[in-house]
Length: 339
Image (cartoon, rainbow, N blue to C red; front, side, top):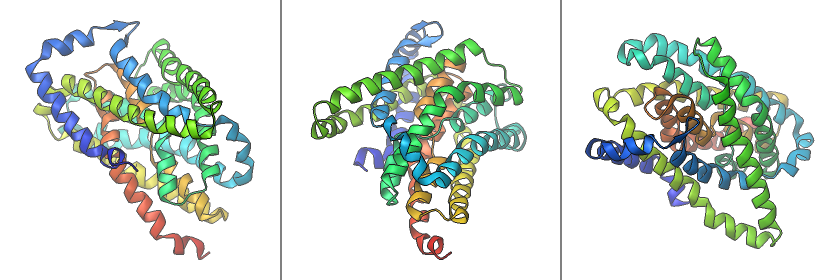
């Protein structure tokens, strides 16, 4: 990991502080940015999110889908955890913690929005960062690539219906047109552009492709951090009134990370998969495509919503928590292989 990636949580905290301060001292500037909308899509944020997402999708090789057959059990575990356990377990945790246990400590008018943000976070499986986690755990690179390609393919078709279904179960209404527009803007179009760009870069040779990846890699994180400054400029007043909100939102996210990674890791062991497959399978089940979640939350609920704040908490804890999960799967290799 680069220093920039390793200390992502530090940069996020600094952006939170910068956004809150700037929002208090220059509210007019951010209100003007908030009004730059077209069909409920904020144009500056839409551009930043494309800069976030497209470089990550360039790394995904959809031709690796044929590798799925090599590790069918591991892929089965990944799909089960990512699409049948993770979103539904987060909907339950949101109901348990946000609407019940923590409800007296949170603003009543944002409870539904917080739950929605948690659901959006869980319904978007990790794309780019899972390559980093896989390398750190000595995961099988072809398996990692194939599961990412398959998850991204499923996400194009399943993200909108799954989110709409879970929000409906949580009694949260969401305009279908806005949800479908978000999928088109932040999944379908970026995938098409990224794959076109990938082919153009690969046509120049593998070395040129790697150099380009090194150049454009920091774009995603930089665009994410700028988006966070904007978001917290709008969220600042609410956070200053109730500073415990971020810590409370982190609780269901942390529980879900450890539950899903442990479940995927254990299932792979039960089914007899190799440790190099179990690690990336567990890690993709624990992490999230938080860029997509942030984009969808802003589009559906707005800058000042609890949904946007909940997805950002996922960004805040992603790196340190995932490094801890990597450490656990690495240190437990002896236990895993003693079966």
